[in-house]
Image (cartoon, rainbow, N blue to C red):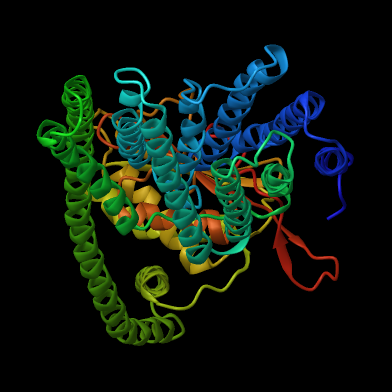
Length: 592
């Protein structure tokens, strides 16, 4: 992947600032000029490194919420770091004096790693749904509050309540060291347990953070021996770690961070357990402050009040979390209930389908048995027709032959309907299939004293379909309408075929259906209304996936008042050897 001009510019800028700091540290003597120059270089370096995270925040708006939270928190960590450097510059550059030993701005230095730890705890390489993400963020907030509580409990009393520079410095270094160790352990575990681009990202952050922790230890070692000063060689590892973090932000766009695995429940469980453990630790801190006889009374009082206040705040957050969990549990229970009801309905439909399949086999066997005597009857009627009978008897013999042939055609249609064969896509005449379907459904209409009006379009082109499947679909759509024919003075089924553009259209409706009512797309694909039965859903899948067409419906109060079946016209391929279908408009919209 070629390097962009912005990437090159920022990389050279980071490298130039690092080389500038190395140059002034090695060449300039200790003094005010070195201090001011080093502070300005380090501030510029932090500004460039912080700005390197902004493009990642903009890109993450199109990614998963976890990744967006990760980059926002990482940028917040860099801004805290930049703010602390600005406070340092206020004393050394503007006031031209040393930073106080008990410095109020040290809390910003401690807090600058907290957003980074929260970014890692968000586990951006995993995927959760929206509700789980909110609960996970609440767990992270509990841990963040506990970290802030730890700093205030250990450090702040010796800064504000009972000022003691020696204890303050020792406690601050201890808490800061624990914070850095936790960060390094989290990065090491994430770099070990992830794959792909996220492993590269975590590994680079681990290296940069390890260098930063080492540089902090080296600087503290030099301060204890009173050989450290701003701009000394002990600052060189520190500025290299800043440049490294900025480079990680720049190169993140070159790694594949889009792929994410589903969230592993064990991770969320451990984060929740750590949050609960943090709450249970608060009474222990309060008890320790109460029983620590060596601490001044104001410090003990401050720590007890702080522990109680933090307990109330974190307890309220736990109450909120449990409320969210209760809502999620109710949602899951309702979803499970609906799934169970759907399963029962599906089971009933499957049983009905098995019954229909058995009935189809019975019809096929009966049709075979009926076909044999019909063949004999047709043969005898043909013999009678050629035996020189009187005119009246000859007319009766011809009438018998006509009725036998009609019955044989009906039996042949039943055999075609009951036959189970693999789908074979061929050019099919829609009118011929529809005539067969109407012969099969005519007895049902006669039993309902309903009429059948069949209007066949002329010169219709063939469609690409399996004739047996298309027969089943036509019978099912017509049966759906016939089963709901209203009890009006003239009940009936109206069926029509026509051509619209590159589609052959089959309309099924009862006489009471409105010809002007809009149709709605019916189907299992996205954007279609869900069918009300398993068999109708199967019809939609066959039409959409195999034929490239679609089924539209006109709903009524108790079911469907009309159906429209649209099938693309079969065309010849470039070689002219086999038919194909024209592009379907099935995905074009939900109406006709």
